[in-house]
Length: 233
Image: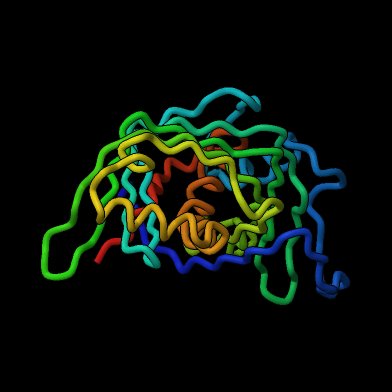
């Protein structure tokens, strides 16, 4: 299935407090937040195939794309390996006023590794400069998905946000980026380092839904839906 462009919202907070959200209007499909109950909920829609995955086991993906517009960079990763650690369902309820299903997934870490990542550095009046390197980063976020129609009509139109529990992820970038002698690459890398939390906010605009869809379809129920993060023009 082709990638679709979603309206993506990013909520980035660090050690914040929850907002009062009027729980009287909520219904809870699961008495306890177990994977089995959540799996059954989605499986009963008849739109997906039950899935099962264990934390720490890698998920092999062909590709993942993300953007950091504040430093004019597009990141295109191939042979991506995604690994979740210490995951759990933090929330699973239906807002009866909107008929939206809200699902939150917590984790102790989400690692994304790619041995072949292309960094496209936009340049004024010139073609992008392309630098190839590896990436091996670990993010710390609670992923929250708002799924229309209580999730009974599929996952199209889902909005995903990331609530950061650690502002700065564990970053491991290759030497073609971190030790380059090219002034254009040096400028971009320094711009990234100058405000890592802001850069992470932009990265998560596409990484948050990428992480969520892969969690949902590997741990819970597979809708046969592919989202690589690409924004098509």
